[in-house]
Image (cartoon, rainbow, N blue to C red):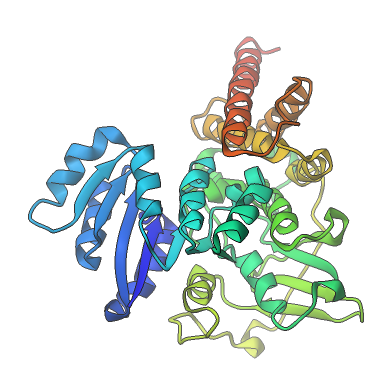
Length: 396
């Protein structure tokens, strides 16, 4: 039996992972499940999968988790350190699906045990790509991408030499507002931004899709995971979300990965790698689909893409600053404090502000320094958000 842990078990990626594992329960020994506030879901899955431990990131939820697990053999734990301890438990395969920078330390802990890390937490590579990849190398761990785009690239590269790769094309649905008049974007509401035309995802990633901040993160992630120059990474709007990525080779060939918009494909590929197994995903009828469309992203509609290019050019800990500011800007939009279009403005201002503070963005890439840059970015973002909210109240 393979020992598996799922970090972020109550989110959409975690639930899709559980769906696959639950279909073959005799093949897996579930070590740890972690979540945040959805205690009922966490406890139900931990009991059903006979996990050794269930961990909530929220210390105040420990009592509720213990109550929900009463009568079972599952141990309850809570708090950030408990997440790291759960990730440190010996396992063969660990799903890293904790949202945001909070997933970095547990993911590193899993790699330090030599586990195979199925990486759905794109922020880990954005904030600390060099550190994450080096940790895997040092401890004999392996990283398999679970983002649909990077899984697609990974699959297209099987049997290929990176020296032959001319470009990598990451596709994007364009999100909820891809066809909106651009002048309406400033008035978009959180409810509108959390409705995706193709994918069923959590609220935060769906807003990131609408703003294309998710694609901005994926550009940086592509550079870090595959080691390609930023000028060889492209983005194209593909509304059907059936081609997840393309790899272009020096002989002019383009290798495309085509599949339904179902995260169980990328998860299942990572779960069964290096083999392929049957998966409960739809089989495409190309004749019925008929047409696939593409268009270049509008820089004015999606300023996050240019910010990602700036981050890659800046280097150092710019990715940690970018992500920390983005997360706080997203919080502020969801809470109704700033407009949809102000998120990119906040991130741009924070990048400029932090760059002027010696010793932050250019510090050595250690976990402590990454977390310090993240905290500094969040504080700077809060200041920018407060200023923008004040301007909105005064009408200036």
